[in-house]
Image 1 (tube, rainbow, N blue to C red):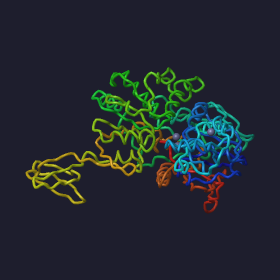
Image 2 (image 1 turned 180 degrees about the horizontal axis):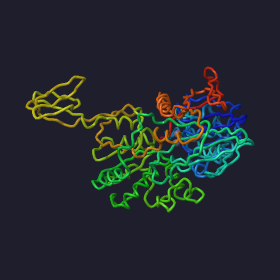
Image 3 (image 1 turned 90 degrees about the vertical axis):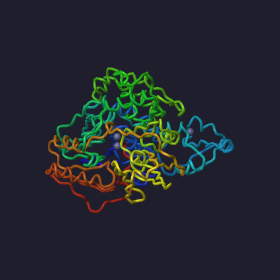
Image 4 (image 1 turned 180 degrees about the vertical axis):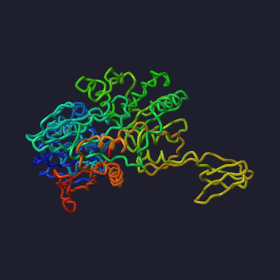
Length: 554
Ligand SMILES: [Zn+2]
Ligand SMILES: [Zn+2]
Ligand SMILES: [Zn+2]
């Protein structure tokens, strides 16, 4: 979230994420911050950009929320997900003592409510109270009511004001603004905010699209801006173009299915899942993928897919889509929703949430099938090394060996090299050349994956494709920045670790006339009409000046 004052008008860009422990990194939203903002602009519907809108509205924000029409439509399920799973801090819930008793007897969780007008909770005769945060709820054997979550979403989106791309609107008396599409998600847009009286202008880039999506239209850019705020998801080292292509993906998927493998693709629910259905459908049209259906394991992915198919192809949304999408993609005839993991038998393909294997169905699929040599897990996005997906794609499965010597000794290690007479193996940090004459057998080694304290042997095949990224490479962002007339200062946000610093050095080298700044959480920056930005002393980490950082949508 960025709090901006432009020529005296105070507003917010994005609402930030509210996921689990990451919210600890975010500044507190004070009632002063929430009530003081005239309006909010959302660049797109990913939860890391809009999740905290629930909290913002609870704390008193009442202004309009500007976004594009596809974003507005996608925001409802996205916001419900944030309401259900996001961390909203300490909350006071109410519940029925009877249902708690019944649930505890059955060994299930009991339902707790927030809103007095919830159609389930309002019927409770003598409600009891409980103050906890969401993580504690689960430990206490409770879960948050789905209807209350829907009310959260509805209230958060009360001020929703959709504006088509390319159409100028007046978010406040002095300011004018326009959305420019970027191929990141349907509806994803950069926004140019300007004051015609002073000529000052700020471009907020949101998440820059990669252009790899087959159904999103290419970027359109404003002619210029004084200041820009850009994303820094990928560092300069991720400048390489993808090494594989969508047609490689379709061909590989077809070959695996024809060979009778069970294929599991962990994927994010919004957009990645729909792109996978699209590629599957295209592969069938081309004849490289055998007849069948793709099974979708995620109720929110199902909801998003329905919106893609039924609500997005309207002509008012044309700016965001390629003609191919607008001619109609029969998503629904190519996927079926399932909740039962066993339905994905051999020769079938499943898309399962979440994308890094850490939660939801993906995690269950990994636990159940990671030991099965006939199952293939296909990862279609960046995998954080800290996640299950990360440990799987990094697992050095191919070179692990178990060598049995004729003497009976067993050596587990990594095969480094092999020639006619010997095998070079690294084991326990030591290199050993083993004469082939001394070998009784060489078996492929199996790495282990520990989930919830239990060890699982990794026998399934692990593949990864990098042709699905949703974010632009730094080189592509650089090309866009070069096209902006009058650009003076650029802030790099939406970044983790030291990535933003490396990007600052890279961009500064490439466009020497422009100043690049990596703001610190809570820092206040003042831009002058003169070509420099001033940092006003040390970062003010008081809670009302926050640039919350959270898990990044990839
Ligand atoms: Zn409720
Ligand atoms: Zn993002
Ligand atoms: Zn995003």
